[in-house]
Amino acid sequence: MKILKTNNVLQQSILVAVCLLWSVAAMATDKNGKTRVGVFDGHGGAQTCVWEAVDAIKLDPDMTVRTFTTSDIANGVLNELDAIIIPGGGGSTQYLNIGTANIKRLRAFIESGKGAVGICAGAYMFSDTPNYACMRINGAKAIDIEHDNRGHGIAKISLTDEGRKWFPELANRSLSYVLYYEGPVFVKSDNVKIDYQTLAMMESDVHEEGDAPENMTNNKPFFIANELGKGRVFSSIAHPEATPGMMWMIPRMVRWTLRMPIKSYKDRAVRPNLYNKEILMTKADLKKERGYYDTLLYGKPEEKITALDWLQAVRSWDAKRWVQGLLFDDSPLVRIRAAKFIAETDYLHYLTDVEAAYNAEKDARTKTEIKHWLDDLKALLP
Image (tube, rainbow, N blue to C red; front, side, top):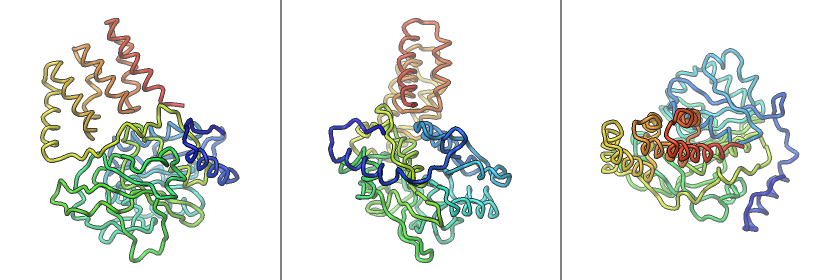
């Protein structure tokens, strides 16, 4: 068993204890001994959220990952999976796209002893929220749903004792930071009697957009986890998979649902110190962000680089949709900066694009620079 590289005795002790605790647990695997994870890819799921969930699972050498659709569920794909992820996007829309008969299949899948992770809208879909299409499988309900568009940015969280057991890499931090994007505000359900344990608490007060009230998000659960029949459900109101240095938290959640032992991930992947402060987007930031997107389209090379510097610094949610083509910009400086942006934001979905940019590059210096960022991105993978 590989132990995390750390000088912190508490972290090592927690990791060893939890590994021993679960080492006898049954591990669901394919014929190659790997756990099979499926990410739902259907109407209502944001495309980038699907991509990022898939990429997060790739950090775990003991897992394989694929996407699946509504028709796949009906055609029996759950027989080929050990755990599922419902990604961010729109929970009720995903519910409608899946269909009630397939929802029952998903629930039976979990209750049989399998795992389910819901991220943001996926967690919403797992909840018992009144007047919202949901599965009612995590014991929580969302409140203040009329202000769901309350805002986004890098939010601060604190781990509970149980959370420190499962995320020992963060055990010595009083606060950690994860990208939040208009996720549900959870409290205990009034109707569904499912007990959940809270592994992390939201500490940021997000209310900049949509006339949302203050002091609604803070001091509410950030990660919750519960039993369902023989299976387990993990719900995250936000997006570790979209947070550089924190993507590894998603396969760790899958491990919790399947009672698998904790596994350490590469130092390149586990970088909680990348963010050490809250970065919540203001209305002024959003206006500036939109202006910088125009700059990426029409600006001079130095202006494009300035735009990318700012978008990366504030961890712009949508910037990842704009940076791909800049790998093939006329300016070599922009091409290098785009490769740097992708590598430093851990955006594995564009790995093949960075490879293509490297292979197509004619300028020797630029080719060397792009190769550096290509190797850095590849270093994320086991």
